[in-house]
Amino acid sequence: MLRVGVLYGGRSGEHDVSLCSAASVVSALDPRKYVVVAIGIDRAGRWHVQEKPVIVEDRDFGRVLKLEKTGTWLVNHFEDGNKLVLYNIDNKKKVTVDIVFPAVHGTYCEDGTLQGLLELAMVPYVGADSIGSSIGIDKDVSKRLLRDSGIPVVPWETIAREDWYRDPRGMEAIIKKKFSPPLFVKPARTGSSVGITKVKNQGEIADAIRFAFQYDTKLLVEEGVSAREIECSVLGNDDPIASVPGEVIPHHEFYSYESKYIDPHGAELAIPASLDAAVADVIRRTAVQGYRALCCSGMARVDFFLDTKTGGLYLNEINTLPGFTNISMYPKLWEHSGVQYPELVDRLLELALERHRAKMKIRTDR
Ligand SMILES: Nc1ncnc2c1ncn2[C@@H]1O[C@H](COP(=O)(O)OP(=O)(O)O)[C@@H](O)[C@H]1O
Ligand SMILES: [Mg+2]
Image (cartoon, rainbow, N blue to C red):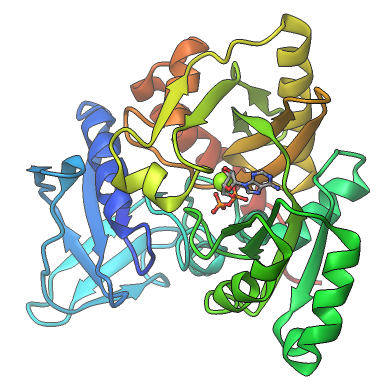
């Protein structure tokens, strides 16, 4: 039987959400087909292997995987080719997994760093590879690639921290000339709306920029669009397919951190989104195009803005490890497109194996 290592937790702002995603993944893995090993990553980044995953009820997050600290584990890969070997140096216990399912999100989880480690270990893993993940997390690089592929994106300006602090007044003047409020200031590589400000008048620009620079060394200033937020799930490697689109309806000023995770009534999901068939079709096609343009594989959730005034469609961003609880948008959209959650998990593991086989055929000699 295939031994699946479900990674959860992580050194990221989305640690808690991950415990919830992982509980859903672990519950969906068919015990007749897989042996599940849960691998919790604590907030300091240390790995803890649990061969008997424990799911508990959490007041805020519902069913979560309990992260138990189980000593000091070393991650090794040269033994038992193409498996991930985990050694407990306290009691000399050795645990191996054949494939990894990263049910983690955000920094050090979704940004290519973890994927790089797994690639070096030559072990198959679910989701975009290191290049797709690094591109997906970077809103500046993503937008340049999307623009290059002719996919519409909201007009933006990227600002590097050193440029801003060299001449804040001059930079501010450039921004004021190019954009009129409302505008959005966002760190280039966060998620969960962390560090994002909606700027409603020009006097707030400098504060919003200083705030975003607490989270990254580059940021984006973007024209604010009055838009419906439409999301589409994409699945596949070489032949990706798109789900029906869904809609997020935030009940806050925008889809902020509070509306995503804190306020239980912060946002509603409409699945499927109420759209003309022709518009839904364009969204699905653009989602696949964007997925390819950003070198994705496995899965991604592709998020759009549909301008309520002009009807214009913009691709906002791509999330390579989207929320994966059984009530999250990504699996819900597949459910409405005829792929149930356990089947989705199976399919993702198959895609990981398929990509791994292809990579293993690549010559590394000369
Ligand atoms: N240009 C924009 N116009 C209107 N709303 C925006 C814009 N950019 C971001 N937002 C709002 O902020 C939210 C978070 O921004 P997003 O770029 O998706 O970052 P994150 O990666 O943190 O989700 C969006 O879902 C939307 O509600
Ligand atoms: Mg977003």
